[in-house]
Length: 242
Image (cartoon, rainbow, N blue to C red; front, side):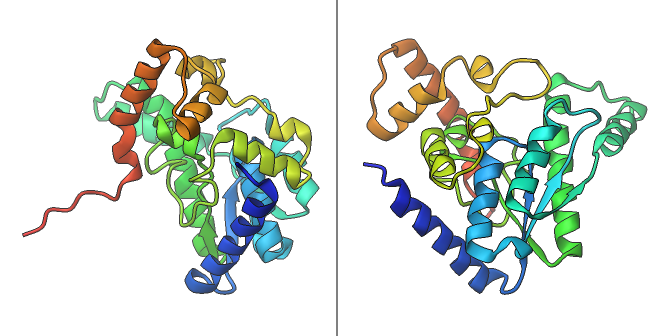
């Protein structure tokens, strides 16, 4: 039932309308990882706003083995881009915590870089009349595979209601390089892919989300548990009312 031509056109128009209401004349600022999500978001923004109003930000944390993919994308789209290495900022926060006597957890090391990257995007955005794009997709959000106030933040979210398979379809329809659209996502830390860490494929997850169909009851239970545990990430921060 997914009409890639129709959905792509609607997404482009939605971005255009959002900027008219929330940032007329502003630039779209996008963290470019070189994967399908940031590539598709950047391409959609170029379609909606023109390449002169789209800014890509490459944010390696020290050495990034796949940085060439990020450079390939910004060159392919012809958009202005900046490279800001976040390693010194990440190391600075970790060092400050250690100096306070905090024992740094593994989860802190995983989630701090995305949060520093998002702070970097907003810093650049405020300096360049921008609005920050969220590049998460529905599949990742469904099981909480994102960092709250890190890659899960942003001012507008073109892919938030689209599954991985649907995002890939849009990328192919827009003519993006196949190696970027089909690039296997990984956390860049453990040497494992996202699917390795999750314990199931996005294809299985997407079918379950869209059709409610899943064959493996154990995987179904895992997905349901992850969704229940992480659903709070998709909601506004709870406020006490009196």
